[in-house]
Image (cartoon, rainbow, N blue to C red; front, side, top):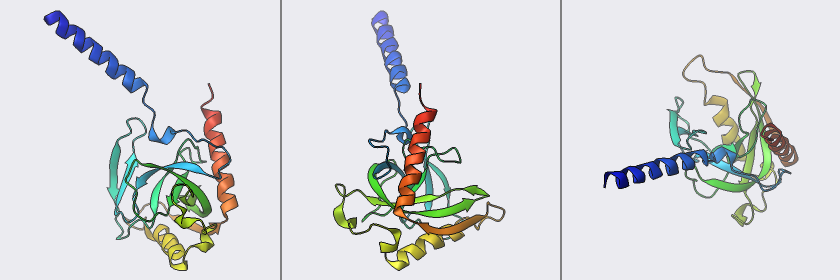
Length: 202
């Protein structure tokens, strides 16, 4: 009986180790296309949230990073474009408009409608603005550019990033450079996908 239990324990340990070694981070979820016209984004923070969640890239757990010090909520779902590498060494950030909030950890196929140009602490930190791909939700099919969003939505987006790091004092200074086109966003995504692919070549 003891031998049987020992064998079972060893088998379970081996299976657990194999499972851990086979783990693929949400952030490494593969992109089907390289051109940036449509791409997958792993959502970390639902729209309307006051809480900043992050995906731990080693375990895949959703971690509460912090609560916003400023009394503002995320105006759109916030996440990372999977299998990308931006200039700051992290995945490229994305803001995704949807008809209801998306749970943290979910992956959604989207298309870009623009990019919010941003400098955070002296480093480029652009935010790709996106909507669901047509086969996910055709509601946004007529939204081709950020300019097609209601003006108040554009203003909310800029206002959020203008103030969200103002407290506590001493945090990095955020500078906004306005919105750029869907084509610019598409090109940024394509470059970031290529950078990730090049870095991870075996």
